[in-house]
Amino acid sequence: MIRAGFFPGKRDIFFRELALLRNNIQWDILPPSKYYPIIKAVGDYLFTFMLLTFFSPLWLIIMAWIKLDSPGPVFFRHWRTGTKGKPFMMYKFRSMSYGVEPHAPTPIAPHDARITTIGRIIRRFGIDEMPQLINVLRGEMSLVGPRPEMLFIVDRYSEIEKKRLLVKPGITGLWQIIGRKDKPIHEDLMLDLLYIKKQSFSWDMFILFETIPSLLMSRIIW
Image (tube, rainbow, N blue to C red; front, side, top):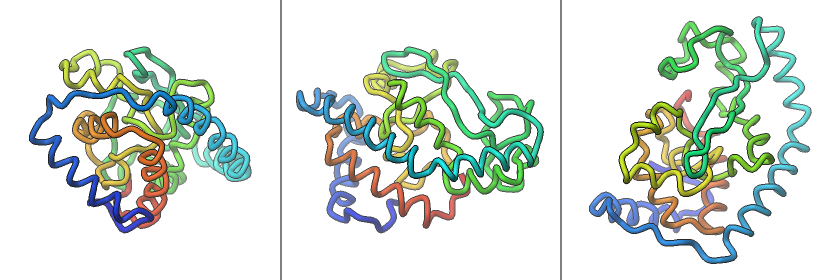
């Protein structure tokens, strides 16, 4: 359930729309307003530059801590699927020991032996995702959108699941604020389809601002 945040009215609308979509998964995806893609693109770049500037001291601290905490690179790089199925290299701060199988199941407990000391902290607050701002600047991701999926899973997508690829994947989305980040990415189909159907500047702002209390108040480690 979405926790208390900045837009209580939007939360009510969200749950009504989600219930409707569950009853009709074949819902047509209508194109957004003609100005929305421009507003979204400009907003992505402006907010990303602001975030990179504001958090640059934190980045330096985290990068140094990762290097001191365990051997290996600072960044974890992984191929993911973007808009229209185009692969791209996604970046994260490395939170697990170097050499861990990249396609292994995501840790579901904080005491997982694969996770480093700094890794437990940055995963708790979603800080490990911050390097994806680089992907936003490169035009491969957006601040808000469906979660970027691994290539081998997308290869098995059904026609309905392929609708996820109509928009850029995002750093955050409905999957984040509803408290289901602990679920496998491919189980969030309904949330992704609802976002694509409702995509607008107001919904993007709703998701961005609701992400803040979701990260700060959540007891979900991942």
